[in-house]
Length: 248
Image 1 (cartoon, rainbow, N blue to C red):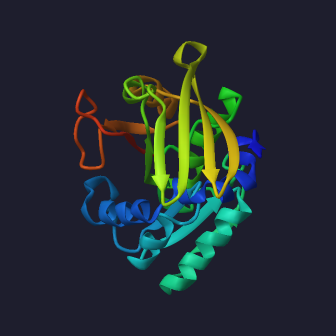
Image 2: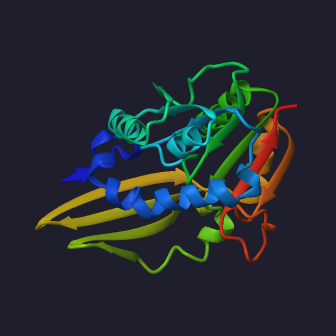
């Protein structure tokens, strides 16, 4: 079986869910919300988790008393998020929507976009539209936190292929640089129960300078870049590219 529709292919999210959203990743989200100065928000803040997936951050945010809305395009991921929310006894508003078109002007104090959920539209203008939608969703003074694997970090991780095992299942990921480092293609091969499933994702990768410029062009002010959720500088010791920006 081969999935070529990438993030718009709902079967892809179902097939690869356990590798993309392991319980370890859920636990990591809990830890980050407890410890990160970049994820410390005022009590009761209205938070939009854009591209929320199965609720990795959405659910623990709601459990901490925030007024949370999760938006995703995948029905399968929203179904999982709703179940996890119900199991946690939390309350979240979930909306199925395209990130480019979601409209809720001035409705949120915080917008989150986590775990490299940005840059997947084929037209660069569409990725810019997503940033503009984030800007529009924030009230004046509201904050965007956008987390991804920066181009500088990916440069040292493209080779060799990555092999991940979960029980008897094996995932092999091979990354290829495209268009002079404008984009990256990931080819995935999953071997599960004697069945082989293949998938391909292509997305734009951004340096800190490029992402900062895009945020400013979308209207954001006070744009800051960090190398991790602990607030470290974006330098040779960076673990992630975390952008924080304010709608002024």
